[in-house]
Image (tube, rainbow over all chains, first blue to last red; front, side, top):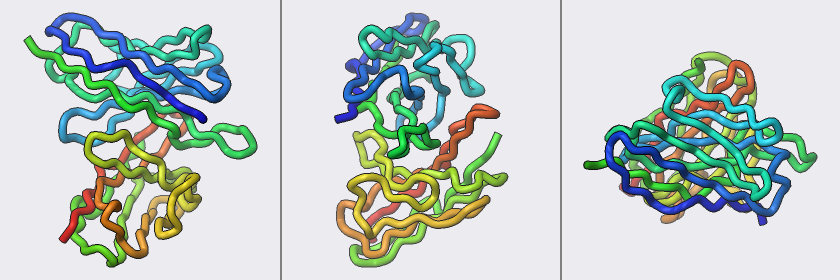
Length: 124
Length: 109
């Protein structure tokens, strides 16, 4: 079955970097875009952007440029989110989510499936 | 950037009652709107895509309607497991966007 499995929780100090992984299985990884979504404690969902898994070209939402980098390793069907110069306000659960797919195989405008989420805690 | 506004922020109902959740877009998104359910400690789960299509495995008591700027998620008869937070979302390639609404918390009355 189609599945996204993310790496485990991280505890980092301010100023450090973190790299979250999202391993896909059950489909052709390079066929469908991968999105990243942030959820701060007690808050709603915030779309961070997406990466074209065929070309590796990333697109970042407003507010997620500069310190946030999306990347891929297609040899292991894995997408990565790296955050540098971590701040306390980066504390959140980060989700990867594949773009949805119609039965025809064409991509849709929804997110499914989602990874289980990775909690990143930034604290001194 | 398209803004999605959900109402109400909190909805208090009893099991067996009908729930009606609203999502309004600041400009037309055609029918490209999705609904998700999120329970505490869990990832969001897709319920509805393209405004009115139920995702695989979603019970028939969930239905979506609307187009343009006004959308509704209806739960015909609430089950205990339906009490959660619900988000609407739209996505477009250009300009690149994937906005979520702020969510509606459905709580037990």
